[in-house]
Image 1 (spheres, each protein chain N blue to C red):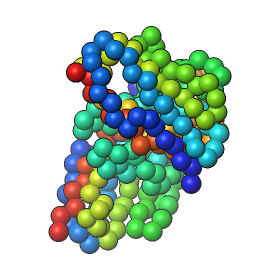
Image 2 (cartoon, rainbow over the protein chains, first blue to last red):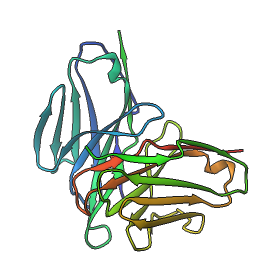
Image 3 (tube, helix red, strand yellow):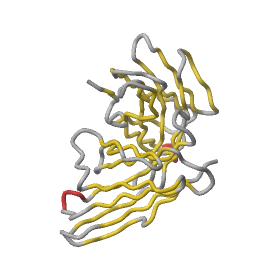
Length: 115
Length: 116
């Protein structure tokens, strides 16, 4: 079956670094996404990994290991505005016998940044 | 970047009535649109995949006769919740992709549905 796991909640301090982990077991894999979602709003795109390794984008970095079914999102120099839910999503491939752009979302991690 | 809008942003309806939610891609043509539902403090659950000019593909457990999806053009998809009940109250979010296998989906701002 399809399974994507993330910690439910995390707390970190302003200015610090936090790592949010995501493990997945899916029938297909065609890339992993990280989204940020503030309460009552739509998700906004943060990063995309399809090959193993680290992708850096300003204060945000995302890592992928396909052999381990593992990814993490790294947030540096935390700011209060980073308090949000962070969603890990895997793009499926071949579930219906061909390529697809279908995203399977994890449970989301609610990050609280404290002063 | 690509912009997706939803209308209405929130709606309150009485039990038994139907509600239509529109999803529009404003500056690009979306071959594929997706409809998600999100309950409080939970993640997004894909309801269906909508391809322009063809029938939607529904996820397991989603009633296609209750959640009617129409994707009549490359810029508009609609979700109609028929005979709504309080348990249908949720946050409905659509997304659109530039092409079938584009690496990114662009999300709309969501529609908060409350059924009384």
